[in-house]
Each structure stands twice: as C-alpha cells, then as structure tokens.
Length: 80
Image (cartoon, rainbow, N blue to C red; front, side, top):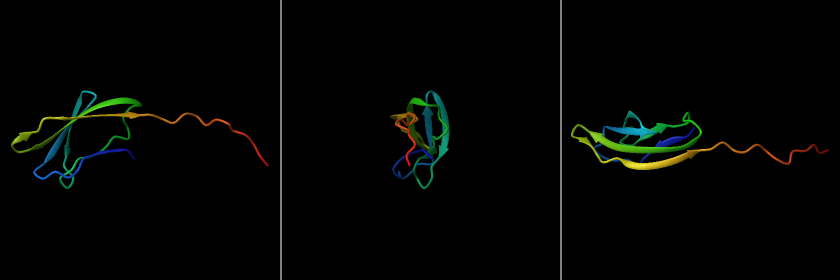
C-alpha cells in the first residue's frame, strides 16, 4: 500500500491535499498526514498539501511522485 505521510505537526486539525488539481480534506492522524494513494492512476502526480486548524491553513507545500509499474520479466526459460 502506498501512503503519502508527513512528520507529526502540533496544532494541525486537518490537511487540504490537492492531487492533480483535485482537493480533498484529510483529518490529521495523531497530528500528521496519512493518505492512501495506492489507487491513483499510473504516471506523474503533482501534489500540494496545506496544514489547517480553526485559524486557517498554511501555504501549501509542493510534492511530486510517479506511479510506475515494473516492466515485464525477461529471460524466461525452463531448466531442469
């Protein structure tokens, strides 16, 4: 399972996470971000994360990652 996580951060109630232009609200888990990104499409993804509480949200922090499947196996043979 692939997860987007952050270090613990005091005073955070939730995070605004924008992945490829789509924003979602994610509750802080023990003051940190923990979001399952296993089901994102294959390819490069642009992420912005803002930490939020009752006073508002921080400036978003940028992050990028690429979901890439492995290539097919090569050099297959039967031995014995």
